[in-house]
Length: 255
Image 1 (cartoon, rainbow, N blue to C red):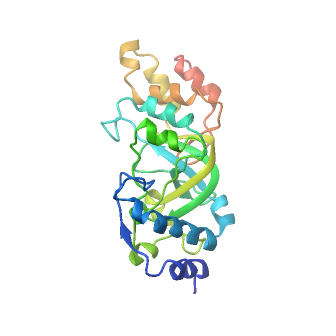
Image 2: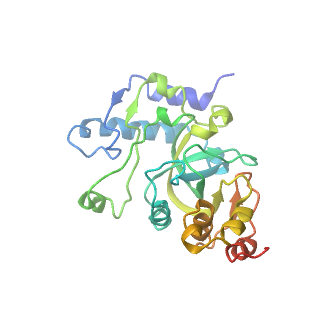
């Protein structure tokens, strides 16, 4: 079967190829700047060929690690709260899942923020996009204060283009745990706690510990963070988590 959208994207990007710094997804550094135009062209080609209705239909989740999945993130709550106050005009990396999916998980971390927004680039494997890691000075970030910080592929070649997602036919659900969907003009619409469906039970148990022990527990800390936001809560199967029951569990009650 001919994949019209993917075929069109491959035609538009034929002959394009480059490698740039993974730490400069905005292509503003001296070494990256000459490749900025090509990176923009790739995103334009994708936008012209993509099935945007399909992109809108996907469940898009930005995942954050905790100190269990990544020991570097001992202050992961702060990272989570910073993300929740980040302007929606800054492009972010998400993972995309088919509507109705019963397993919304990622090796990236156990805390997910479901967002709605406009997808500007997508691939079945994040290593085919390499949208980079943004670590810039305040002066650099201020440059994009109004327009928002863009994300672009920091490398591209014909092999990578085979893995791009343009429509349902080119989307591979078996790679959902490692895909990448860049999203712009987004807003958070829900939160996911990947705790094996036992978040409330775990919180109820830890809430009865001494405060110095209780506050070390990941599930307890996650519940406190989730409840700061008036958004629907879900587990990794997209089963709703009862907010009142979770609040009661934090107090050590039965829920």
